[in-house]
Length: 295
Ligand code: NDP
Image (tube, rainbow, N blue to C red; front, top):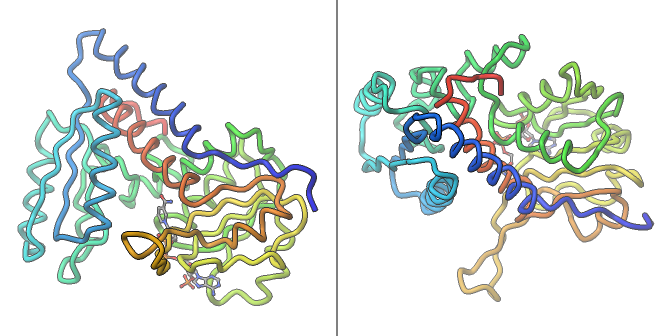
């Protein structure tokens, strides 16, 4: 067993980033600029999405960023949503646009994301921003991968030369994170795993840094982790819990209680990666207002 496992406190680190953004927003406005403005688009009545959006706009307000949530009925057509995006793209008072995912089934999310002005795409999901990340050009970094990198940096985790294993290859998390870890200056040696990976356990056990972005509760068990590994849990999964008033609780992709006995450092769920995602969204919105896309 590891002598002392470091709990990577995403909530506290996100608090630092949010305070820094608040100071930078104040400095930007002291130069005579208006407040950064974020437009959030919410389609349908998915309660989890509504709750995420509330969290994001509340955090924006606390950082001095103005925002509005444009809420539409689930029956909104794809063409109508594209028209909304076009209007926000053309509006010079809008710095950042966030389309809360998932969208209703009749709307092609890719089409909507591709319609965003890449320079207002504060979620970093437009293919232009994905390409900029690949090509090491200035662009918006997707918030969750950027947040994970910031967690590692601020927790003094050595990435240079480290073997990083990312389980999950989504456009939202796994792929951009792998690219970020590979960047010059971060310098990890990266392996990306997915549902077709053979001998997954042998690979995860090689990791110095193991990132779980799978979407399956407690998927990463203790036998998958070597002593001393840094474990980053991206997963947010609902599991039934009759003892809670709402009937469920949120757990990660990692079997936290067992894995923490082996990990040298680990993020909890909730309170790990999640708060960082919001903090990086605020940061991206500030960069968008400053037309500063260094990411
Ligand atoms: P996706 O469903 O898009 O991707 C999941 C990935 O896991 C896929 O690449 C899939 O492989 C892989 N996978 C599934 N089963 C296995 C398996 N048995 N073995 C190995 N790999 C497997 O999810 P996301 O990336 O969007 O999200 C992942 C998790 O992170 C979710 O719980 C989500 O809620 C959470 N999340 C949290 C955020 C935060 O702020 N904390 C932000 C975004 C997401 P394949 O490609 O082969 O299907």
